[in-house]
Structures are given as structure tokens and as C-alpha cells.
Length: 71
Image (cartoon, rainbow, N blue to C red; front, top):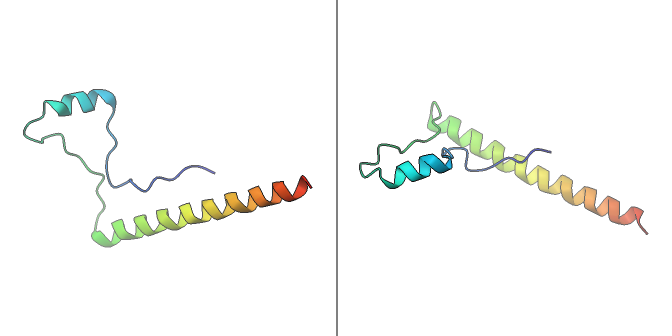
């Protein structure tokens, strides 16, 4: 399964962008990943959260199954 991050609303800059941001005294480099509405952002966040919960449950089930086969 792929890893889903819960920080999708915030843009993740690269190292050079971080260096340039150090000298950005006017905060002109502040960028965020926008949604069309607050409701859309909420839906994206809830789906991401539940996907991560499902990922954790599936991982636990697989771990328990593999431990049970070793006995």
C-alpha cells in the first residue's frame, strides 16, 4: 500500500526553496495546496484519515496472520 500523508493541504518545498525562503522577509513564498471550498478540504482530510486507519488495520491483520503461520 502506498503511504498517504495528512499534510496534503500544505505544500512541501524542496531544499533550494527552503534556502530562498530564509531570505524571504515579505513572506511572498508562502504557498498552500488549495481546495475549491472548506467542505472539499474537509472531505479530503477525512478520507485521508480513514485511509490511514484502514492501512494500519490491514498492516496489523497481515502481521498477526504471518505470526500465526510461524507456529
